[in-house]
Structures are given as structure tokens and as C-alpha cells.
Length: 201
Image 1 (tube, rainbow, N blue to C red):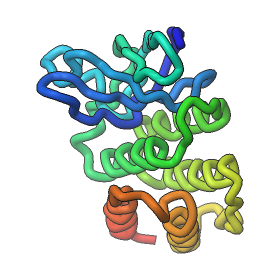
Image 2: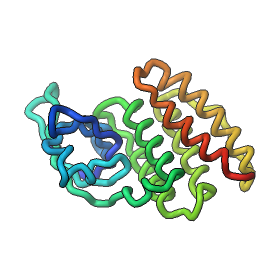
Image 3: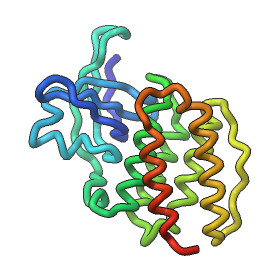
Image 4: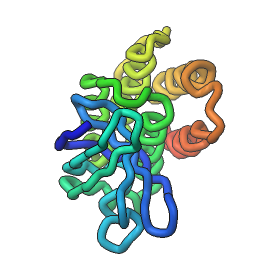
């Protein structure tokens, strides 16, 4: 494996004293776990924040070897991580993506959709501007993985109906792609749901 491409950082797990295992989603190569030397250092730690877009160069000597990656920041989501709702949304969609997508299988539609959701979270003036997009991303992800999602589009402007749909999709995610996960990925969604629920209808 050897490629250079834009990628979305979906997770960065500490490895050893200074490195991380980054889970990077690219359009043509899907979700790839890669070793990033110095990923916990002062220079790379702000680059490997989930939600950031990076230019990644990924190399491995064989298909069975964990690849090595070099990353350069393209777009940072860090300014929005100090805001409770955007931070919860970014944390959830990236954790979900990292947890359920199979390794090295391209999902170009999900790559584009995730980039769109992250951009909406960062530019919309409130959650009303991105909550439906996030919900549609979850439904798309379920369908791309072959689970389907019997959830219709809530009426425009009906916040209560959107939250009801959000709850139904959450049950589908917990029942299917996240059913056997050891890490409690759904905790990030619970936090997001609590914060969305504080918005008046």
C-alpha cells in the first residue's frame, strides 16, 4: 500500500510513548489505520484531532503490515471543539465512522457526506442548520453497510419530529453496527442527544 490523498481523521489512539494509531478515512481507500510517529507530540497532536482534514501519505511494505503515515493539516475543526454542541456532533460522527466501517474498503459517498456534515457543523449558526444533515449521514451509513434504516425524513422545521427520528436511528445503530463493539461508542451519541434536547422546539 502506498498512496497520498486527502483524508478525514476519525480517531487517534495513543500508541507507545509518543506515537498514535490514526484511523483515516479517504475517498479511494476507505478507512485505514496507520502508525503516525510523533503523533502525540506538540506539532502533530493538533493535526490529529478527529474531524480534521489532512493530506495523508500512507505506506506499508505488505497488506498485512500496519501502514505508516505522514500527515499535513488541510483544515482544522479545533476552533469548534470549545463549543458544546459542535464538539459533541464532531466527536460522535467521527467515532461512529471509526467504529463501524470495515478497513480498506472504499465508501466514496460516505467520505463526501462526512465532509459535508463536518463543514455544516462548523459553518451553520446553530444545530438547526446541521442536525438533519447529521441524521441523514447516519441513515446513509446504515444503508451503505447493508442494514437499511426505516426512518422517513421529518417535516421541515419540526424539531420534535427530528429528535424522534434521531432516537429511532439511534436504536438501529445500537442494534446493528454497534451491537458487538467493546468500546461504548454510543456514549458520544447520548451526549449529543442530551444537548440537542435542550434546544426548544
